[in-house]
Image (cartoon, rainbow, N blue to C red; front, top):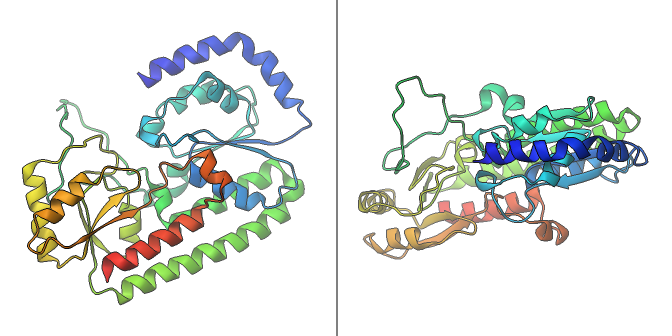
Length: 324
């Protein structure tokens, strides 16, 4: 469906794109950067710093719609077609991007695919013990392509690599301010490293090393960074909202076996599954805590000062409570 919508939008834009893009390219020579999700946007803004080149930065997913259900508008496609730099995740949820990139009006546009930058550090989605698979699983006779976990931004170690790639490409399209971007990158990477060390310290001192989610699980990269074990109701990209009796029973038993003090959820979700898990434990006194996967950050949140590092710092506080 997304692909059909995009092909139609590209066709609608074909006649008007040339004049519109001519106006954009002559727009005081300002660099135009388009990002799909909040972490990319925030990384760009930190590397730009005081923004000496006057770059215009757009975050496409700015209304709280997450990556998995986003459908681009004709205006979105035009922005991608005419920008100087486009940054996207590159997973299955970004299948629509292929058509948008084909309609390039700026032939010198730089494109950054986060999964391609990370290469062999990208992980496949996995079904761990007790996790409920998708209900609609068609068994094709041919070989299935692996499904990669798209939530790469939830690793501070990945963020270190990805911000370096962004700064390098920024210097390529704006060489006059290369030194500024390098300096801003160094300062930002210092903060990333410090927070990474704080996460490791919390895990080192934790009495338990397991997280259990009564929800989708987009935090695979984070738990792998610090060698934590996890259980969850669904994989990170799952569209499922109802957990089976077997899933609830398994997760409740695991809470007891692992002596967990909390059952986890992600932001903006109904906590009913987590609460049901708690009610089926022996003590029924576990807290329900939420980690923010940054999939619902809006333009209003950004205006109000929400940042990637700020969210990761809050997640660290939650993690500390969950593992105590």
